[in-house]
Each structure stands twice: as C-alpha cells, then as structure tokens.
Image (cartoon, rainbow, N blue to C red):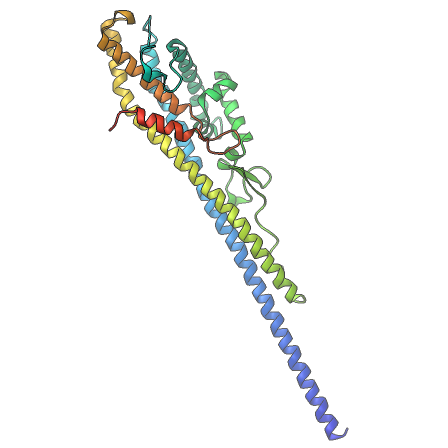
Amino acid sequence: MPLPLLVAEVVTTIVTGAAGAAAAVSASNKNSQSREINKEARNLIESAKRELDKERRQTNSRLERFGRAKLLVIKNEIKMFLTAFSKIHNISMADNAALNEFGLASDPVQSVSDLSRVESLASSIAGGAMAGAACGALTAFGAYSVTGILATASSGTAIASLSGAAATNATLAFLGGGSLAAGGLGVAGGTFVLGGLVAGPALLVMGLVSSFKASANLDIARSNMAEAQKIAEQLKTASQQCIAISRKTDMFIQLLERAVEYFSPLLRSLKTTVMRFGTDYEKYSDRAKKKICAAYSMAMTVRAIIDTPILTETGAINPECDEVLGKVGSALPKR
C-alpha cells in the first residue's frame, strides 16, 4: 500500500476512534448525571415523607392527649358536678345572661340531662379505649364533637362508632395509620386525604438507566426530578396541615386545663352549698344562688370546649374552633 494511503488510513482510524471514545465518555457522563438526578429525586421524596410521618405521629399524639383529657374531665369534674347539681330542685337561671352565651343554658334540666349522657358515653369509651379495645378511639374522641358522637351512638356502641368514624374519615385514618416509611401514604391504598389535599403514590420508577440511551435517560431523569419536586411540595403541604391541627389541638388542651383550674373550686363550693342550704333552690340566699350559677356556668364552659370538634367530617380544621377559643378564653377569669 502506498505510504500516503497508509498514513491517511491510520489518521482516519485515529480520528474515528477518538470520536467514538469521546462519544462513549459523553454517554457515560450523561448516564452518571442521570443516576445522580434520580438519586436526588428519590432522596427529596423520602425526606419529605419522613418529615410528614413525624408530623403525622405528633398530631395523632396531640389528638389522643386531648381525647384522654376530655375523658378525664368528664369522668371527674363533670361527674362531680352532676352528682351535686342534680340534687337541686326548682332551679331557674333565666336571669343569668352569661350562661346563654354558648347557647347551652336555656334549659338547665335539659343541659344536665345532656351532660349525664355525655358522662355515660365517656365511661363507655374509657372502658374500651383505655383497655385497647378500640384503635384510634382516643384520637377520634379528641377530634370530634361529643354531641356528634351522641347523635350516632348509644353508650353500648360508642367504641364501635368511634372506631368506624376513625376508619371512614380519611384524615383520622391517615393520622392513626401505619408509618409512611413502612410503605405507602396511609391506609387507603397508598393514598390519603388531608384537608382537601389528595396525594397519590409518591415514588416513581427511578434509577433505571440504559447505557444505550444516554440523552433520553437524562431527559427522563430531569422529568423525574420535576415530578419529585411537585410530590415533595404536596407532602410539605400535608406536613403543614398536620402542624396546624396539632397547634389547634394544643390550644384546646390548654383552654380545657385553664377551665378545669377554675372549675374545681367552684365544684367544692357547689357541694358545700347543697350540704348547707339543702336542695330547694328557691330557698337559697342570693349569694348561694350565685355560687350555683357560677358552677353551672363553668360546667357549660367546659362542655363548650369538649363539644367543639377540631376536625370537620371531611378532615379539615373546623372553622368554628377560633370562635369558641375566643369566646371561652374571654369568658374565663383572668389568671
């Protein structure tokens, strides 16, 4: 072969080989970049899921705590009130405007009867919930209105009703459900509903990179990242909703504790008044009547707190919460 042709062939081979090597390096770099982007996308979602799971568990704990606090107040202070107050006859409180603020005091006899049903319900719930007979019962009792529960349950079916409510309300099911890290977003087939937010399965099929389609792999990885960012934002919104529920629940827990603080001495005064003056309200002195009214007023205040649902049936925060917090907070004596 003539020398010029040999040189030309060698040069061509070198150039072609260099081009092929450069292409291979470029493809390898793109595939490596694709894998890194997919890894970052997975980490982004997993981090958001862990944060949401933490807030979910904390919110569930807050609602359980409120549910337990409600039960204890009903079983102790409310029961003590009912025991003493139910002995009094000829009660008239129409002249006490403060009692009518919550719309619960128009008929003291009816109000006491309603409280008696609440106490009976609480005993039923406590017997089952404290013994672990109903998963989520305390969470549901913390989240729901006692009146709403009474409307759908007798004392004999209270646990079943609460358990059913917790299972059918997507928010409560999610809050009391299994760990996100254990697989999925709650109990409803990998989906949950939280305050109107609907989020489907979080993880896409990521990380499969073909060495023969480097450019396509990079495009897919970038698309995965964009989708992961959307999902992470949804999970962040859900975390924020959990935080909002927790904060609202904490406010009600603190308000209930504050109310009980003032309720306890009024109960002692109520008991003493009945022992001293008997059971005929009409024969009481004005001062004694004021003591009875004060105890009754605080009982209705406590009822307003325990009877306000934190969540609506759809799982959103009840818009009436702030109104009750404001009214009850201003009605309670200043510390």
